[in-house]
Length: 230
Image (cartoon, rainbow, N blue to C red; front, side, top):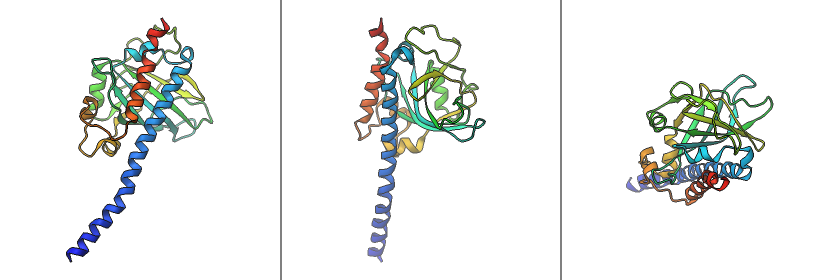
């Protein structure tokens, strides 16, 4: 009987390993996609997000491959990462997030777009951590300015600036009504079952993969372009 129970336990563990490996792989792929988005920013700064906004941000969310769930009228769904800007100027490890609902203004026929959110206040980040968070309701959101010279942002009272990227072109975009939340399942798959968002931001949850450093470096590079441009 004991042997049978042991065999069942081993069999159950063997079945779970591919699922765990797959989950970790999905999160790494999401980070790789976020790095690619940031590389697009640095490639054409005159046609992209002003680096000064990234430099002064409290947090940045990168959501690659947001897809339509309706045609012309409908919502959107996507998942990505959010990094907090630390007091010493560095960036935290990424916490995984999800975006649902709302419209990102894709032209008819487009299948997906990348979304980047520049979060300007600590309060907005704290409110996001409290649970489900609706853009435009829990925090004012506006389409962000584009271009190296766009130092004066439109909608100056907005707590979040939103951007989309389709076919290599960045543009400000409205995300009114979309829900943004931390993805506990993805965070646990990548950092471990006990990892909280606070643990991730404070460096207490350390992933086995070194790809998070590549993402932090890519964001630092995009954010510090403001100094190089002057």
